[in-house]
Amino acid sequence: MIHTAISPAYIALRAFLREHDEALQNAALLLGERPALRRTQRLLDAFDSQPILTRRLCRELAALRALLSLEHVGDPDRPEAACFARIDLEWHGIEEICLLEEGLVQCLDRLEAEALDTAPLWRAA
Image (spheres, rainbow, N blue to C red):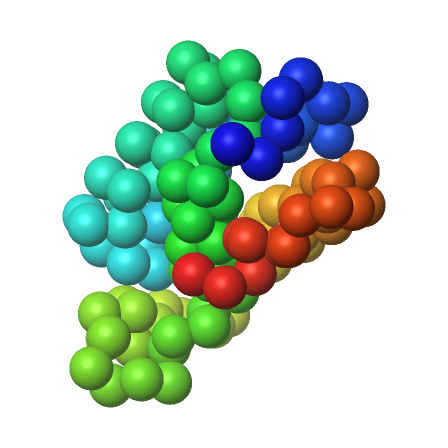
């Protein structure tokens, strides 16, 4: 386990995920198709039932951050590359995805700042 008590940063992350759950699911579907959508839904469900940040949640947060930041779109062996190739970069939803990624990173940075004794597990999916 990473945290033994609910921290303010964890509460803020949970609030961010709840507030943007539909947008995160839509972004996951667009950027990674159904597997990414299912993974994001499992992450969102886990945050509703998990009072502490676990290593598994950190891995899932890292995967979501990587998806939203387009980390794997240059790898032709990854489904994200094909998904990204189909996106019209002039589409208005691109800005929302960027804002989601920025918000998630801010939440993760805040968690990292609170957890000085742990490595930033969400940065390495």
